[in-house]
Length: 303
Ligand SMILES: Nc1ncnc2c1ncn2[C@@H]1O[C@H](COP(=O)(O)OP(=O)(O)OP(=O)(O)O)[C@@H](O)[C@H]1O
Image 1 (cartoon, rainbow, N blue to C red):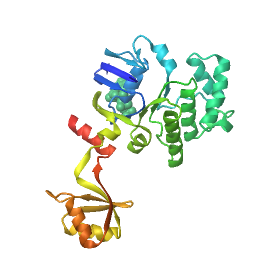
Image 2: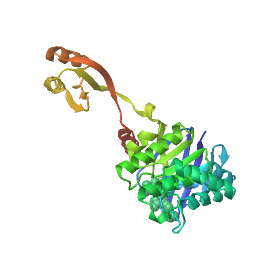
Image 3: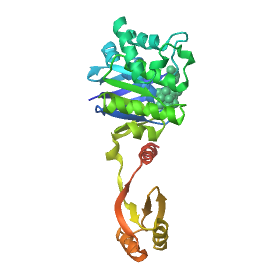
Image 4: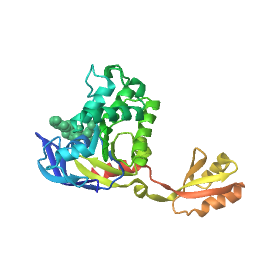
């Protein structure tokens, strides 16, 4: 298991940030979802041993989170949500310093800093001071610092926050490459569901310090037996009008129609309508829940 937590409780004064959180997550790319204040960042801090738990325990990569904090930090990389750069330092020095903080020898840390800066696309900016970097460059610098020691698990907390679309795509591309080509496990915390879906194969939904849902995204996407994605050869708009005449709701979506059948009807109504309007159905499959529906459904069950 990548992460196992067992009844973790963490309070800050009167605020309960984690309320007996138990979860077991497999290796892979895990999306961490939850509304503001759900406890995502607190959970990440607990995993890294950065804060003391009130009760409960757990393991990261099989290592006990109370007893093996230093080992965990050497095996895990963490790119925080906050800006944590030291002004005046050149990019390459900043990344090498991050390596030294987790126990790398200075020469190895410097050599790896050059490598990871090239990897994240900051090779040419390596000798610039970090405060002169753009938002996107700072984010890539954080990722470089988090992977300098070649961790088995990389935790990214809101990595695309405040980024423009091109910068965001670059970060998502890096996250995908680290997970799929470099074999690194990921915990990817984000409010942006398309980002999570573009990178992760597994999600965990939190609310008020508890686990609300978790699983493989593909398994959580339930098929609906009264809604279909329909591809047709012919006139999509005409077919939609024929379906509307039969009491179905049909919406165009890219190159296909999303059709909700009238109550009590089966998919036969689609074939029948196609026959009448002269369109050919090329593909027909039940619509599956979106990640947004999974997320909102999990929150609704809690309240
Ligand atoms: N250092 C702290 N002192 C007091 N309360 C805190 C502290 N850190 C977090 N909290 C509180 O604990 C709860 C969980 O916060 P946390 O930051 O873990 O949530 P989150 O899911 O990461 O939220 P966000 O999406 O807004 O980052 C919140 O009510 C927050 O106000």
